[in-house]
Length: 592
Image (cartoon, rainbow, N blue to C red):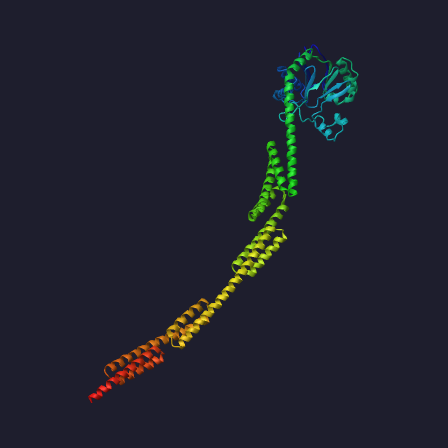
């Protein structure tokens, strides 16, 4: 139906060279739904013209296997043509340029390998054309060769893609080209374009009637009239697309398609709307995330870490929802920095300065992951924390010196702590230093009172020791050596308590003398007691003179040791002895 309801007219001319050799070939197949037009230019030297014919035959056969105008079909035709030349039994390698044109009577698509040219004209103007796959055309692109010099350039037949190529066979396949009524397609080999200018061909086409053969004849006459010396074989094909196929069921089919497509379109629109809404929400979330990221940095820069934490947590949640790995990592580093700083601030408020210092040190490490953001503020907080700790270190040192009774040095440390606390406006530290000073002064006051009381007590003890010593001396002078020993011993104990070594030594000397006197007195007493026993024995024997003599010896001894009672006792004994003696004398006179 397509072919019958369209008008495609084809005409061509193909002539041999002056050597009566024509290695060009053109063939076409017009089926009901698709048509195939193939033109080949053999670029080998064989007279049999095998290259072009083999290529056209292989390409059209490949098309007839599965007619269509798809890109795949074009490639299949070109590969079949290339394979035919490679597998042909020939003494020399077969090579050719080729163009394959496929159409469905509405549109066309072509495939090219080599330097055969295709030109599509519409309303007398060129609307599409091919580019030779040659070194010359590459040089034209590089502006090393002008366009008007191509037909005579030495490298115009030096091709980088052609049939018969074992490797790197890369033909050009066009997109679909939409046709209109009265379009004209011209296909021609190098025998034409080397001698006829493109502008001249365009002018002929623009003046053409509805018969393609007239156009072919006009172009051929123009070529032959110039009688070029180097005229090679040539082939020229002209196709008139006088009328394109119009599908009578197109509107009905479009209506059916539309009815079928409405639910699909609605579904697509719904999905599209949902996707757009979702996309917009994602964009909005991304904007909010980026704004939160920016706000976080700005709040850190103005040292407002509480607001920075709020913004950072919100932005991190959005980054997680958006699955933005990089932003999640960056916000995570910022949040760790913020949390470390806020923890340090809380510990500072709780007066846990050592823990606060550790928190700020951790925050300082975290700044390395965020381009040193907040580093100055953290450094200031570390300096402040160190100053706080220094105040308490000074107070602690003062406490230690105070405990060791070094009150002057302790006072110096407390005053230094107070001055440093005042300098950094550390009210708690200043109060602690002042409390320590008040406690120190109170301790000093109590210490002075204790020392005064100790001094008074010492004076009393010294006075008591001196009194005891004096009493001992009195007793010693009176010969009361036992009493003197008691006094001296008590005095020695006092001086030991007072740690008065000089007095201890003096009393110890007097004790030694007293103890010797006591020992000597005991010996004299024993001596005196012996005299008394002898006196008693003599008295008992009636030897009163001897008894009196012994009593006198004993009396001398007791007088020497100042035993008054013993002296009185001996005196009484001597009186008793005199009485006994007087009583004995009358009795003796009477006897006489």
